[in-house]
Image 1 (cartoon, rainbow, N blue to C red):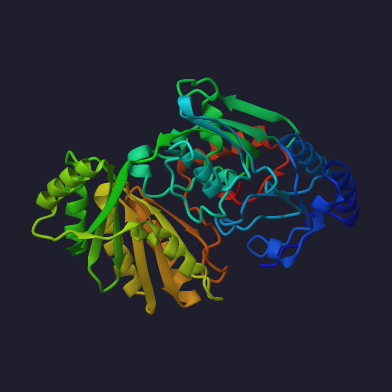
Image 2 (cartoon, rainbow, N blue to C red):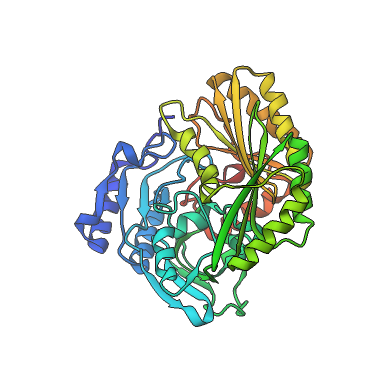
Length: 432
């Protein structure tokens, strides 16, 4: 998809000149081909040095009628719809500090451009962590992970991002720096704003800093797996483990067509606690056998995305959300529909929460025809399918699927925060 500049040369020149005065010349540059978002090419990249500079630059773009694409590490720019227009990439690269780690209060305040790995390294020095395992932590930033609501297997025990974030500062298109929440876990004042911006794909404001609750690092960990055989066997096993008294931190299903399903379980405890947990698990999974897997299986979700991005084909990954009791049914549905659109191969990683991803490999025309059929079937059962990381030949025009009756409310919120449609126009649900 080739984007068309949405503003004229005069507007861009005026904006770039004013931005250079604010952030200095070296942090304003012409966009290159690598800055394109789903084939839409912006004109200018700006890297503010702090949140005040970012807010002023954002207001300048808004006043000039320029479309702004917020960007952190750029790891998930393939998520969401292609933007309707793109003029300015507003980078948070230089907003990368861990501002305050109040270890005694179990909180951390961090700027949006800090990578997840750097944040975890800082927390680990005090024996703590952000209980979150997003994709590409070495490159993914705090702001980007919040904007995309990306969480992994640890969500089962520690909750989603909306459960971990307790405060946020947001730059709005009018230049306002809005702040909500606090740095004490029990403080609930202003809690709605952190929840609202989590998963909004940067369409309401640009996240400049966040406050999280943190947890202690585990004393020890152990990952075990078992071959479940059929998908139905795997489903029964997932539900049995969830219904047990086991204190597991993560539980996932790995599956590829024409192969046996495998269930992986993560325990975090003391050495004696781990031994007791494993013995209880053996009784639950019998007659299946447990094997030590090592922590690498928790990177299997990322491996699917890495394979999707490899080479020129850029196969899509369908992010599914279904009831935990419908995991096997959904994966059998994927297999059945894929069989009608040969040759399409599929592999899946699904967490016990019912959230998972399915890599679809095949001819662009076949994959593009399959996705609407799969989405319709999953939505009929109350689930959802969001498509990302594919070339425009593979993916449907809308990455999100049906928003249901929530769209009018979402449009109203967007209008209140971003009246001109400056931020990520068209990228979110319903073309917001």
